[in-house]
Image 1: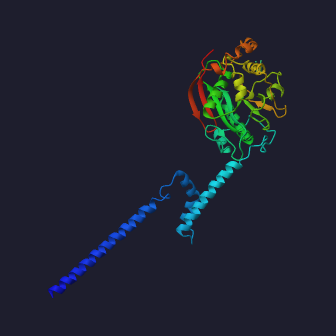
Image 2: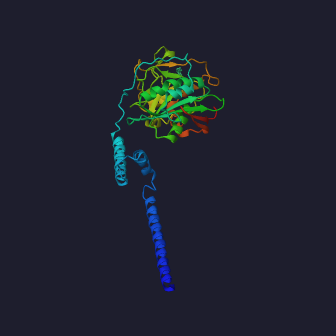
Length: 365
Ligand code: BGC
């Protein structure tokens, strides 16, 4: 009896041990496969693969497409990711150059200043403008990168109208552009041309611009065929202003709105820095261009029509009495005064929704 029960006990003991061992083995094998599956590339996705999986894999996998087993889903995911990469590559290659003349242009525009405009409304009307006043067409490759430089002081009302009219026009012109408001700090005499030089320098710190449009804040084109870009020769854009009864005041007039490529700008050593107060700096620029053998290109009088917002003369911007003398000496001064001698201090840079505002100390006369 004792011998039998001893034997039974031994059998039971061994069976229990075997069961425990089997359990341990089962747990180990399960754990091994668990760790291995979470260490697959899907477990540690790179941002790139994550992007593809999110777009093409995850939503499908989460939806649990019926009848698709894990292997098939994985295969499909891989194929979809590859397909997406191909599509992206093709799209990059496919992007055609923007046409010389944008097909979005509408021609003559109605421009009036007796309406209410607000920055909020402008923002809503132009949802594609990026922070800092930047825009780039999505469906074609641009021909030029254009920085629009506006010399500024205390003209917020005018700026609102400028943004209201110009942002839609510039987008229709299919430009890759940025708007830079160069705000002269303090209340010393205004220096338009020096602010334009500052705009050139500061815009280039931000993006590889190859064309610069220099515009007064109070001038609005009346036709979107007047493209704010650069041409073979320096361009004068504000050729028929309402202020001058839609005519050029004189043949050499280069004021208001003009555009110069980076090369054209550098060829004339930028603009003069020593024209304080109103007038003469645009004539100096004209002289610089002609001394370097360039001519002025212009749109025709119909396309070049523009309106100026009426205003009183700004404080600290009286006509500069030295301007006649300065203009007479451009040939001698242009290499000694320009972008090569520019000095200023940036006090503040504000990236706003519709433009970038750079406040600068440009010194005094
Ligand atoms: C001034 C220019 C100005 C033009 C038109 C000229 O006498 O020198 O700076 O743009 O008049 O007002």
